Image 1 (cartoon, rainbow, N blue to C red):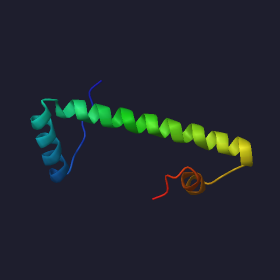
Image 2 (image 1 turned 180 degrees about the vertical axis):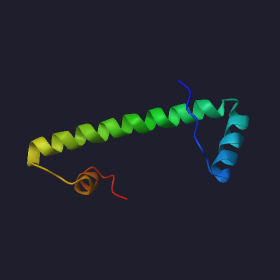
Image 3 (image 1 turned 120 degrees about the vertical axis):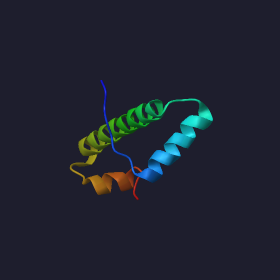
Length: 71
């Protein structure tokens, strides 16, 4: 599948430099970043589900705080 995304000029510049320095494509880095984000999101959802089973309903903010993910 092909996906087109818009990047800020600053992000595109950083990504292009990284790709040039490492010899990997910008697409490779985008794919890895998306895969890692989705995996992390799945982990958070699983943790939220477990928290709900243990102690009842929690807000996302409360759960993130309990998991040490609060901003």
